[in-house]
Image (tube, rainbow over the protein chains, first blue to last red):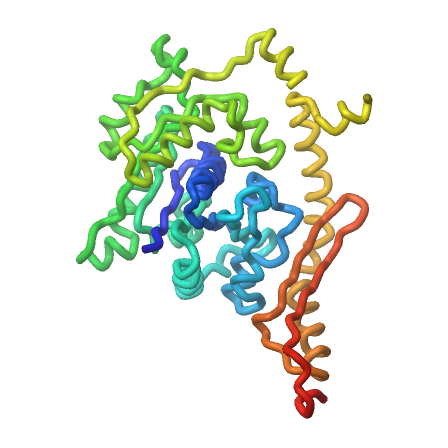
Length: 272
Length: 89
């Protein structure tokens, strides 16, 4: 049975697209047929983070408006044959997204894929609403920072009221997971950043993973590669753990050390 | 020797990769903006022309695009059923 998972946060810049790419690629690496969808109409970026931006022909809006078939709009990843990207339009208005259109696309995708990962835009407007509306599960991406935690709380409220599962009210509600990103152990130790337990106490949802602040995330996005494809990245390892938990494996929660390459490592890294 | 180093970009050069990718992408973004419907229209027209001569299923059309810095390639594959006399035209 295909699962639809929204990656959402309310606040912008916390790592939704990075997390969508990493988790999508992580699932695909394990052999699950996975599609990642960009819901940020007008500000397309998932294709860039996935490294397929040069091959985008049609997009989600073309499919919704009947200008292209779904199969034509899906961009297959060249590194993992179980992974596809459904880009959004860079030029259209977000009003081009309709609930009927999104529902139709998602139900068609469910026939072909095991996991459908919806990358929500920031905010709580139409794009964000439709990205979460049909979800079975939600990954709430949060930084240990006051405005991010507050926005995540607001989004959790919306997941519990403004989704199909909430409106139907008969089945299970949307299962929400917390993904703590840009976590900086040193700053937590110095008392400059909220520790994991404090964020968990406030948001009160199960923790999917802790992604350390990492230099490898920028490097991965520079070259258009989901960070889990970088075997040396601690952020990548943390995402792999999160993916394992997402598919129900029991993995001990651990905080990967941050990456602050030493001079020697940087020197050697250049030769690698 | 130098070729070897050129083919193996240093890890620290991911910033240069980012710039190059953006330059290509933005050049296309900026020029495509005025022609939002170019590809759907192109597909419709090409299909219409082909359909005048043979029976083609709308689902059997595959369009691939590869944007490059100097040139882009557009590849259109249309699955054509085996010749069926009397159905063409």
